[in-house]
Length: 202
Image (cartoon, rainbow, N blue to C red; front, side, top):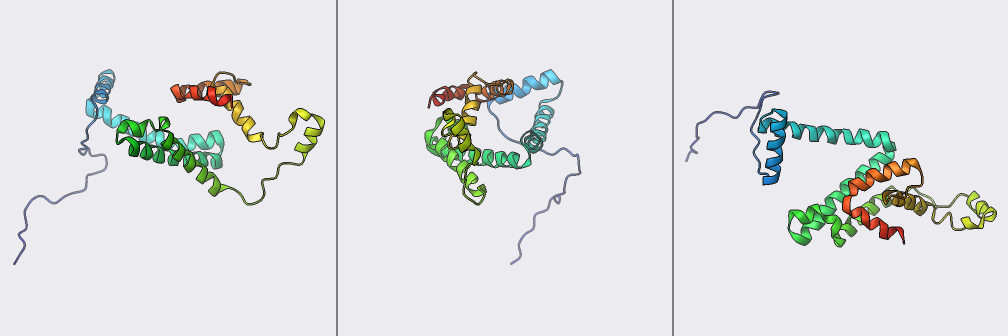
C-alpha cells in the first residue's frame, strides 16, 4: 500500500529582512495602547507592534552592559542570576496558588511565592560563597576598644549598609547619592516600598 502524497508548494525559508506573519492575542487595554502609540508615531499598528518588540529585545541586550558598568561584571552577573531566579520562581509560585495571570505577576504580595523567591536568591549566594571562615578584620576589635559604641560592628556590618539603603528608599537618605538612588528605587518599587517603613523599625 502506498501513501498518498499531497501536492502544494514546498516550504521555503524567508529572506533576511522579509516580513513574516506573527499572530497573537492581547488584552483590550494593550490593543488600545498600541493603537494610540501608532496614531502618535504615524506607523501602522503592525509596524508599531514590531517596533516595540524590537525595542524590548534591544533593552534586554543592554541589561548586561548596564549592570556591568554600574556594579562591575561580577556583581552585575550575580544580580542577573538572582533576578532571573526570583522572577521565574516567584511567578510560577504565584500562579500555582491562584491559577491566574494576576497571581503570577503580583507574586510580591503572595507570602509563599515571596518566600520561595528569597530561597532561590539564598541558594545562589550559597553556591557562590568563597571557601574559608568568614572572620572579621582584626582592627574591628580595636575600633570597639576606642569607641564602645561600635561594639558589634563586625556582626552587623552588612545589615548597617542595608539599613542605610532602606532608609534612603523611604526618604531618609544619609548622603546625596543615597537620596538620589533611594528616590529612583522608591519609584520602581511603587506601593510595596511602604513595607520598608515597617522593616526599618526591626
